[in-house]
Amino acid sequence: MNNIELENKIKELLSIENYFDMVVAMKKFEPEYKKSDFFKETKMSLDIVVKQAKIHYALQLNDVANKLQKLIDELDLTKINELISQWGEQLDTENTEVREMLEKFKDLQ
Image (cartoon, rainbow, N blue to C red; front, side):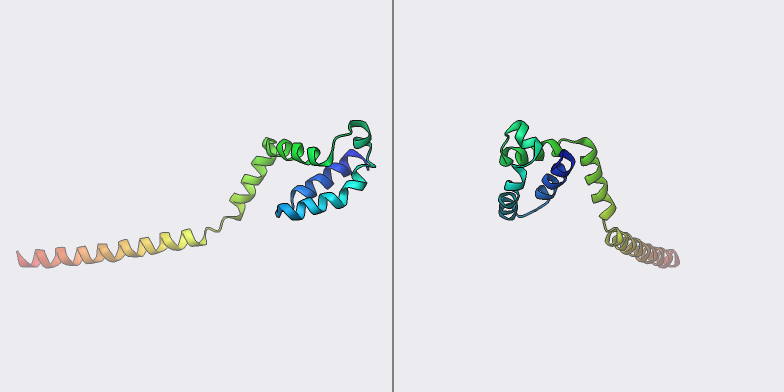
């Protein structure tokens, strides 16, 4: 297993949202990890690698920017548009009522 394959696997492990499921997946992957050149050279435990990788990837500004852009892209603006439309209709109704009252007041004079 080369470093690119190892990185992909670590990212896959980190993408597991349920912590306990991630730990189980790590335990299953550990024998394969220990055969990697990276482990043979560094002797770093998989637990340490995953923790440090999580910090490393969290601090990558490109990843943060990409995640932020993804959140922005996924925003559902239809509800906001509906609220703006309702607000506009409300103002239009109120303006009509005020105009009618002014006309009645004008007729009284």
